[in-house]
Picture (spheres, protein in one colour):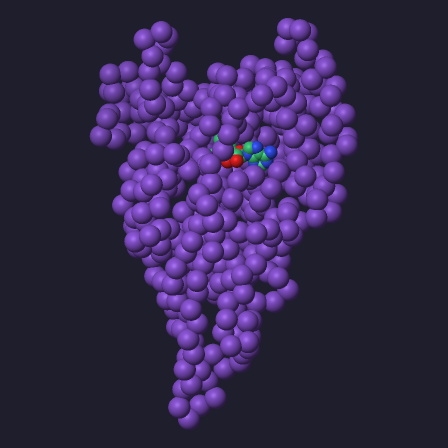
Length: 447
Ligand SMILES: C[S@@+](CC[C@H](N)C(=O)[O-])C[C@H]1O[C@@H](n2cnc3c(N)ncnc32)[C@H](O)[C@@H]1O
């Protein structure tokens, strides 16, 4: 059946699925940052469908989110690699897949079910931004008209950039499309301004028109247009995480600025490396973010830690057996004439339990060599909670690899014995929590 004839079936099936979505309990795994307790900044590892349903039913979040940005897989029928570093070598590792065995109708249903849930979460005066490209944006426009209503269409933003390849068979494809919809006619919008250079960069000197000059020449300020020329995140850019298809923060900041105020909640349910939460945090907005992949979640955590955000991390699945084993050493010395002790916690080693299929075949030998020669090069970050309680990791100190360097031991004077939890993350986003039964002879307990 042609897709256009199938469309009503796709919409009907999506509505049925939407009505039957079942939420999952949110398992709080980490509280990160000084103000994490009770924070409204949430990051969830798991399928966004169940997460959104739980936000609606358990957290009463219907109509509470001011801005939703999503950058889902584009139906490109490819897999996307992240580039991570083991020592000095770049290693390719699957970040996420964008292959759909059952074709476009399966993809569109996946998207539509989630858009219905997002509509429920969106504030009556909020905006939703759907980021796609030529692959499916035209079909998605029809779905957006169906879910949000044609009359609630606000903009089609063309984001144009220079990077990427070209072809001799067609014009170089150098833009993505972002569809913007409101939930109702009373949406909030704060127009932004941009420079508009005068012809020949010379002053016009029109009466009542304010003109400015920069190194390029004379310009006026006008309301921003719907074609945005913003560079992609370059190889040497400071914000680059290595995660595939990372979007520039400038792109997200512009969206956030145009439709939210400080304190509003911004959400991204396909957050990848965490560009939306990073931009929202920088602009004093609250954020809610979710991703299926642990590499995405750990990249997001690393990014948010660097900018000192406070947030809670949830998982939709109870902690299973980790793909890595870590050896953590705890040494303790009495401090003379005091009831205090000096505790030294060091990372000693790391083992991967079989390299998963997600590591590119060519990279496997290099990873094995690093594991043999200097296994701690495989650690991307670690953190310590000195008072581990109720199964939640609340790190007091966090170490992240920066410019290739990572601290591997930490000392602290303590007066009371308590349970310690050390979280170790490898370069692929695999995580292990080592609970140190401090009262039981310092042996590490691996879960
Ligand atoms: C295009 S990437 C997002 C990139 C992100 N905007 C950034 O700047 O890094 C799409 C993300 O959607 C995630 N994803 C796909 N299906 C998902 C689902 N059902 N629930 C949660 N995340 C999902 C993938 O793991 C991937 O990280």
